[in-house]
Image 1 (spheres, rainbow, N blue to C red):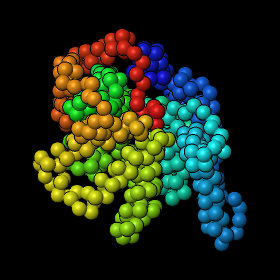
Image 2 (cartoon, rainbow, N blue to C red):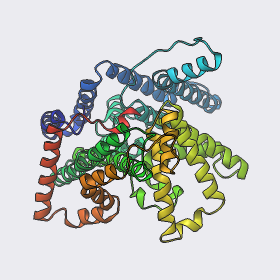
Image 3 (cartoon, rainbow, N blue to C red):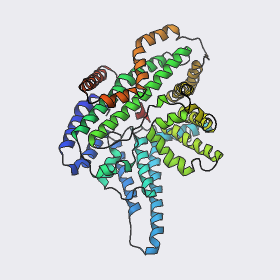
Image 4 (cartoon, one colour):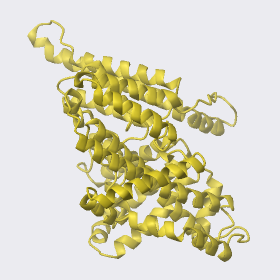
Length: 473
């Protein structure tokens, strides 16, 4: 079920919120769990059983970590450590095993078969369950935190299941650590003021998705339909810029909606974006983009590998591992691996040479970032390597064939989309956020929110189906 759908906006959400607000507080986790499973099950009727299985298995292993059987005092510490290792290892094998089978098996099989020259590994052609990358990482973070002792008291099963399957962030994040919601899982007060502010935030996110991201997606698709190898350099850059805006407002819009829904339910879901397109380096960009994913890789992969504490060569190796995994996390294809390793190269060069100087500049750092980001998003968006090569060539004036999409088409695209492009530039800055926090309670702001909501509903009704991009990952 999509947040930006009539079914969610006018059926699921009103009915769920009515029950959630009227039910006694002690039953709200049960209502949240039931509503989340219904939300997921509408779109994934079979995979909801796998979600339930994963929740039960992970809860069982985490409880085993805290289990204290009767044993001599001198042996308890060793046995506890052994139990925790067994439980953590078993949970990681199952969690990552399911993720590998559904998301990476066919990619690995095709690669092996290609190297072997014949089919020696079967292709499964399995459908990717929505949100599996997000809820897998969330459960893994919970298991590791239990193992480390960050979580010292395990929740009851309903609370844990509600934490994992909470519908505002189940399908596309943010990736929430249990300690960020632990207190609210035990007890939370629902204030009308928070519900109101949550609705406002949700409306802003809906507008970002429907009114900006979807429109930029239309421009990107129009340019790609014309042919990746036939584009004038300016058209190729316009397409890459359009996709850069599409993926940003699509994912940021979802994250803002998740934050708004969380506020309505009594939770504080962490911020996932901090105006990344205003960054002065790629390093700063990744401190501002998809912040919960960056935090996950930093805390559960980079630091355990040694981070930057074991010399320059080891740091480079650690960065290579992190960015290879980051690329593959986004998708099982070679372009995603190339995308991740592109950032590895850029970040390694920045870290060891000019990165700090860039971030101290007022203009050059912004220009540098705004040139590189569309190039990296082109790598991310185009899965066919030959088509990707042609498109990147077009961006730098290298053409393999006659340019078919040139000046006249560029003028037509700009005439049609110039207002939206300007709006995207403005909303990529901190200005709209500052205005929102300053004026959100004024009477005219309420009118603006209503206009955004009903314009979004109109676009949803007349537009084609356009799911969130990160549902694929």
